[in-house]
Figure: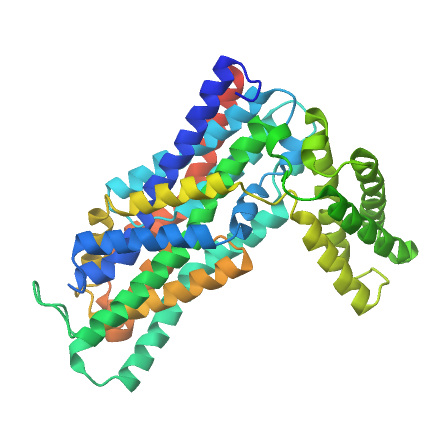
Length: 467
């Protein structure tokens, strides 16, 4: 397979299966939050709810694009970390997946709503940090700290926003809807009025769809990490994109960059400027007379990818630096050319998206009971009412949808669980929360990143020594 020896082929298959298993766990771990409201309020039968949610998760992944997936891929600077030994790539991927699965499965087993996003990002950061302990000059380059900071901020803000926004939505409900039925606890075995059920169906569907768009893309990103790390020649570039159109984009980037006055740039920016020009020339030389990536020698494809990453990344940084002496229209044109150039290396084959969609959708249909019980009964001292379930899911769907649009990984669990907590507080204040459950969830959220960082980093160093 792809010219790999038997051992490496087996390890590649194991890595792909582990990535699928992680996404399967993600389905019943995270999506239980989405179905909790409709199941707990008797708005849908459990079997119908999980199938409904599973189908919408599948649809969300299929229609969600790959912005979040590339956010995951870009946390590790693959151009710096992929070397000539494919077993090093296997060590990296195995450590990442095993540590993420251990934490995710463990928190699910104990019925604790925990963030799969935090888990996978902590595992990635752990591997990046572990490079400090290996020979070489990786240093700070082993983690894309700019991307890590953006991702960390999105994950940090999600529970705070979920909690606050749910209180506001509950306030709006009380102002606009005077029917006391929706503020009462569900009566076991009795369905709520049809209009309440329709509202909860809609919010459950939106959370499921946007969960697929956001968390499903993380699975796509994981598989792309595996393929790029182990088979860089085959999956570095999208073979369906015309190279000559990308050559045109790169030429325009170079032309616009060269218009700038270098004397206005800081020393670090001058180095980035020089790298953009050098990589542009190398890219044009490597792709001269070639129309698709298949025409480039297998060993050279990853080099071409590195050129394009450096061109786009450095150009982006120069724009953000604010010292490029270009007009507003030229900056706008430069940004457009950068975006077009990224299409050839920020991609995922359709089979990857379909596989992850299936794993997430199927995972949604099993194992949901543990998390549903925690969300419905253990966050507040009172069981969740119809209005509380709807307000939490409205907040979660809007938050996750916005994050997906911006290409930022965000935690479905954090958004929805904190939304439930906020809705409980909106009813009777902080005294309406079960302190024991909130403390357990908060500590789990707090320790997810350090635990997965240590676990994945340790496993990575172990696997590097063995493989």
